[in-house]
Length: 311
Image 1 (tube, helix red, strand yellow):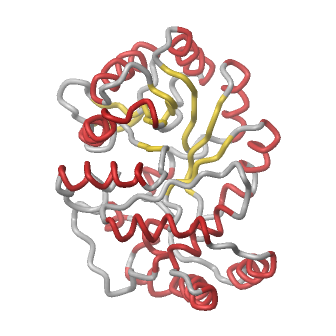
Image 2 (cartoon, rainbow, N blue to C red; image 1 turned 30 degrees about the vertical axis):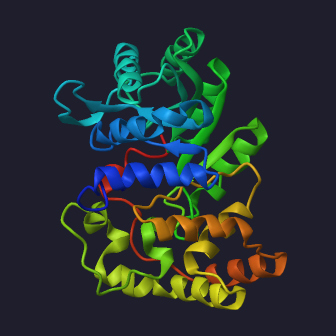
């Protein structure tokens, strides 16, 4: 996502194509995008980058926002009407330069369309060979269960990290019971857990963090207590804070697959290094004991965006 939108101005296209292919050469085979990123430009970038290696990777993308498929103009809410899902699928296949979508998520639950209708539409797309697997994003466990009864849900994507542990309450236990995988986005707290952001950081106007309450100057100052815990573990383990944040996620459940993003080769190398970092039971206990005492300041999303989650 950060390659084309949301975290400031878009990065150089050719450099990002090289970075994506470098990631595959390093063993990465799961790539995540969405029509909403750009809109459209992120799918187009990924399609070009992965075209030579398409049969060796898994590509996940998303539908569900109210986006005009011609102009890219964004409406105020969601759109998961069956005919729109089908139109998005066809447009996405072209942008990704492929004949199938490996994992097709509903980006946000549409209150106006029964989830059974959404699942049924994706089930038809699977039967037609245009989609291989169905996923949901930022959905409640009750919605997941209803969708799963119509078309088995392969994965659910939601925010999860030491910076936001909300899924632990209901979502993760429910997914485990259903045998559904979990894909945490913002696994490093949208960069906060790397230790590279503090109260003095200035965000570009096009960076979504500039309007997120948890990234206000006062919140960043207060929430540095969490970063200090992560930094202490990193120093003790001869690792970086980003690696600790990722290793913590990997240590939670074997069916959790975080999707860190980057626009830099050295950050890609750093992120992949987290696979080799083992956090012991003692490490994890200490992290939880210390972070449980910290009351984080600020909501994780602006109010309007937050209202679209957990439905």
